[in-house]
Length: 575
Ligand code: ARG
Image (cartoon, rainbow, N blue to C red; front, top):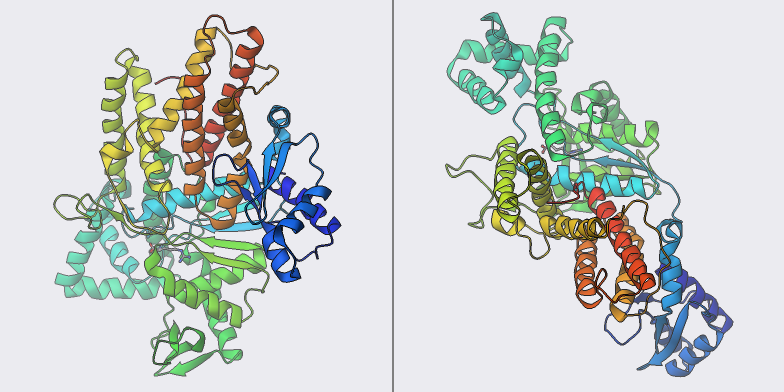
């Protein structure tokens, strides 16, 4: 239960007792302006309009029936019929002291599939995969925390014609006595080498094409080479996941090749349902639903003239697997906005073919491009794509310089650990805190700043609270005290802390991690305000007040670290 739904229930009851039909919502929201209470119920106006009565009078009769004794200290009507609810500090204190209360969720547990990261194994992971990996992982953590059964699916690109060329190249290296791990150390270089071979040497190109056929027909020797390539490439990705503190593991890899056996049956089923029709030798589904402006239906090719299958075919087979075998209720895709049409096509075909029932939610959550300081897609100085491994290395180095400058006393070994958390945290937070659907500019100085809505600012706020406890000679984990909220800054902070679950609820519904970032930033800022206005360890502060403030601080620290953890960002006790 969270405060908002708790109050909404009470207001709904009062509305019903005031004779308002049940289909009118209490329209309960956090109050937008100071002085208008903590929450507002704005439903009286819409109900009055429909019932053709005076809205203020209707609001009054709702308030007359509203039982918030012990919960609110004041309920008042403002303007045309807003009901402003001022919560009682004693109630806030009581709620915050019984943690379970405000962290419980009432949503039904769902089986949720999250398709994210999903790099192509032929090449090195690059910055384009960073956003999908970071955002998808945060949402996976948050949904699991809220009680869903989350199944991560790393839909890696591990099949397709380019593998013929790569295997032929690998075979040559191995034949010359090289180790696969070493030959593939620089995956990007290896790919370019293979491509050059393919373009310049017709005999090599023939062999590569032949290997594609051999691979598809299950030739053992060729399959073994493919598996080797796949294994080494995957280990590169896994290395990045570890450095990034991302929860993806080997068990989550379920790549394109996993669907090979279901591609023919998928097309067959589309044919039987008369959705796929032959067009110039290919099998195509024409979607009137996605027609262009001139009314031409959108073509989705599911099998090429030469019999080969496509990206869309694999995604359709994946949907069959996810609904039939994994029994998903909700399927989320974190893929670049440029693949929006593709996803729409896949979803539409899958629904029409009955691969996915109406009650299963299919959601493509697109994101914008990561831009360089020049406002163009992020590239190296020489104009090539930035390797993720290099980017993360640079994050650590830059963070180390910042950490050393801030605190020269930190022992070297600890500074390295802190720098890693700060550097990776800064990169992730910079991404997560922006509205997902927008492009954003990647800026080292801004993301590593200790001021403003940044990862380091939140990590720092957390360490501040730790240092208060250190100074007081107390252990934060074990600390407990009675909470008393006398000052307005204490009340504002307690209320915000209690709204954690509301933020998570919104993130879960919209898959927008920036909502949680904004919340945490706000919480940390309110803490700073509280800390300035309400001294804790100063002389002359009574023990009860001191302990109450310490307890409030501890709650904030817990919420900050829990929130950051859900974003995949680590905290430390000092920095
Ligand atoms: N491998 C693709 C790429 O790198 C992304 C795959 C996304 N997931 C999916 N089910 N289509 O562009």
